[in-house]
Length: 213
Ligand SMILES: C[S@@+](CC[C@H](N)C(=O)[O-])C[C@H]1O[C@@H](n2cnc3c(N)ncnc32)[C@H](O)[C@@H]1O
Image 1: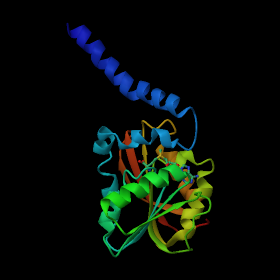
Image 2: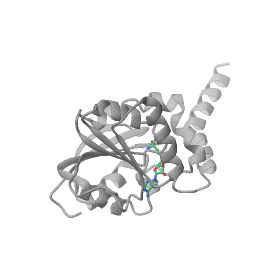
Image 3: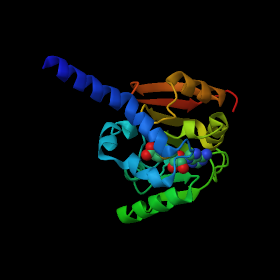
C-alpha cells in the first residue's frame, strides 16, 4: 500500500516539475512571444496564488511612474495600477496588439484611469529618456531574442537610481537560471540590489547603475 502511495506521490511530483512544463512548451509550439490564444494560462487561479508575492517584491510606491513590459492580458496590471493610486501612472507595453486589447478591456472594467497602454517592441519603447521611476517584467525577458538590448532600452527610460525588477517562474518553458538573468542585467548596466524567492519563482531587483548601457 505504502509503495503504491509512494509511486503516486512521485508521479504527481514528476508531472508537476517536468510534465506540465513540457505540455506548456508543446502548446506554445516553440513560438516567442507567447501567443495571445494561450493568455488564459497566466490567469489560472493556482498561478495567481503562488505569484501573489511578486508585486510586493517589485515595491511599487504611490505616485510613481512605472513601466510594465510584456504585461500580456494584464494579470499584474490592475493590482499594480491600484497600488500607484490616482497620482501615479502605469505604462504597459506589449508587442502583441491582442494582448493590449485584452489588457485595455480589463483596465476599463476596473474603472482605472492611470494606465497607459502601448503596442510596441521592447527594443523601441515609446517613452522619454529618464522618465520612469521603476520598471517590472514577469516571465518576459527570455521571450525576447536579445534580452540585453531590451534591458538597455529599459535602462534608457529609467531615472537615475531607478529600479528594475524581473520575475521568472520554473513552469515557463523559457525559464532562465538566476545567474543568466543577472548576467543579462549587468551587461545592460544594472547593479543587483535584491533577490527573492526560490527556484520555483524568483524575483531579482536591480538599480540603474553608473555602468555602460
Ligand atoms: C509569458 S507572457 C507574460 C505575461 C505577464 N507578464 C504575466 O506574467 O502574466 C509574455 C509577454 O511578453 C510579451 N513580449 C514578448 N516579447 C516582447 C517584446 N519583444 N516586446 C514587448 N513585449 C514582448 C508577449 O507578447 C507576452 O504578452
